[in-house]
Image (cartoon, rainbow, N blue to C red; front, side):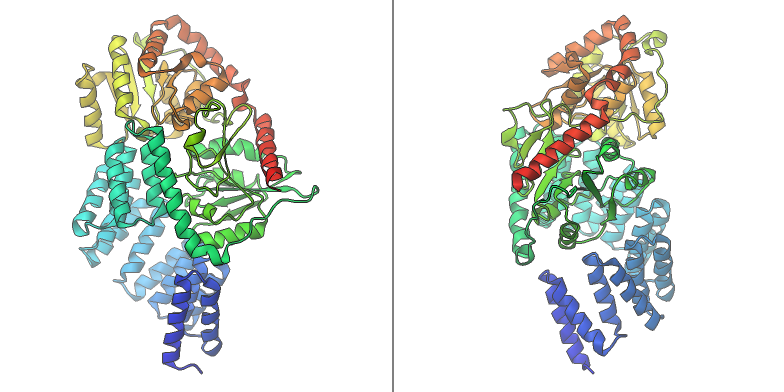
Length: 624
């Protein structure tokens, strides 16, 4: 029998092994203790948490269940079991176990917060908010509970309350990294890129090794009209250099060797990594590829880091060979899993968007690594070999220096669009009945820069009595700022209609009220541009100096309407004004754009899939 002091020493050894990334060594120590005392509560719980960290979900669940079986009166054991159940997809069981922990210890702060987090992640923000308020009753000075309350308010659409909660968290703890980060995200989402960047920079001063905060900063920079393409690329490179050194130092002893594809009779294995295998813009472009892949020649796996699966998730699951949920799995464990799966080409679909798994790619678990679709910029990661693009988004000889990846231009388009099944039938352009032209930009407010607003004001001034429909969210102060912005340029408030987030059917119906769509810049639209065209609206876009500012160019180029691509803000105003003054010309576009799209490369799923597969095959052949 191991003495109590010996167990304490061994637990300390296990903890030190875990900090070094030696998970196998930590596991051996835990097994040593359990050989002598299979009921040791602290060992069962810590071993279970380690198993969760490395992605060994079934072991985690077994250990946590054993802890509860032998220690049914332990609130900590029930808390540990709840975490394991949640991570294995047993969400209802997890909440029951967490509630049991709270029944045993009503003022258990960690369990109160975690129950709230579970409720929030599973789509019940009101119940989550009640848990966070209970946590504040336990500890009124908790910056964490304040910050989490802000998360719940945000999901409830109470955006001003959310911002107030985050700011209250900073009053309680000025160095609260999460609150600075969340404020940055809210400012970005409402279109204030400059203020968002400042918030993210402060968060990074406090936590320089947080890749998710770096990603938020980089995403915000792409929407800032004062950042040049060269400056943005340099910041991405700094991200890559920082984490390449950091992750190499931690992980080098157990780095896997990339596996090259071999054997003509073996299917090439493609792995897609994303948090957006759900009802999302990325999924709208990915689903046509998944259902058109040649499954006799290619094995397809998806690694899902999303929190809320839905009906689109299930559609995607049915189109692939393996669909793995990897939420909470450590980068090291996920790299081992990808390697064990035998993935030849690992494809990042997030870039620096929310819940990305970019740190995984530093570990190079696949012979060929690619980024595509979700982020039209470099990742800054030298270990990612290629970025899929096209000649419209990245004209040859113009943007290569902006990337750490090698650009692989698909022969026609980097997008493959499928129209929404709920898209309403087309109606005549509304100016025939309203008597005035209506412009619309229904892009994410985060993409709307001051320069774009100024350009739109110039269009409204040039087209008397015209109107503009915008998506600005429900921040009262932001809506007032936008109204004041236009009023200062002579545009009355009633000419600019601001809308909060809409359901998909309501969003598509909104296009029926508009005659002409205006693309945002420098962060241009992708899905919204396609949607507007499908609803029969000409779309005016500005050709920028980087892919993020050229997604509209790519879409319009592939549909064959380059006349709507502007070379400058003044040219943008000219094109929009000419369209507005040619009222008879709008009706034919309303009738013909859908057919034009259907016969374009943008909607040819089979051809697009063959182009992608040819690219992946050539990439692997080049590495063999």
